[in-house]
Image (tube, rainbow, N blue to C red; front, top):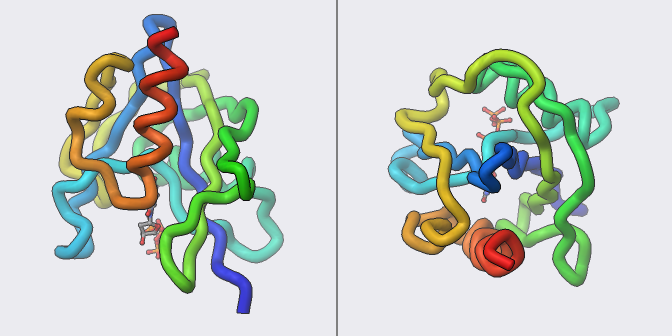
Length: 134
Ligand SMILES: Nc1nc2c([nH]c(=O)n2[C@H]2C[C@H](O)[C@@H](COP(=O)(O)OP(=O)(O)OP(=O)(O)O)O2)c(=O)[nH]1
């Protein structure tokens, strides 16, 4: 079976800071940082799923822009899941942690590698840091 798709939003503000979200569950992923998002439901495009998940989890609205692709397109998570990430900008509301996160942080590019990211997100954060610092 092909892996289930998870989408994540790289929400960037006018100062090139990136919104990172710290998971509070499940226990093995708690306290690690991720790009807000979640699983794509049947019938949804990745972009629709991302807008829905960010609204459900953070209470704000985003506009989804270009995808940040790995050489293979998606970023592997495990045998069952793969991640696709998209740049995005806030269009309405202020992001606040909901049920899935205990903290949100606007992270300057220089500090991106200081966070403990979910494993699949580590290369993304590293490449973003290099790209956004340029
Ligand atoms: N949202 C998100 N999930 C990620 C990232 N990186 C990464 O490995 N994951 C993993 C963590 C989880 O195992 C899975 C996403 O699951 P989730 O719990 O956020 O999805 P969901 O909101 O749709 O939750 P559910 O329907 O399963 O309850 O993907 C990331 O940057 N963002």
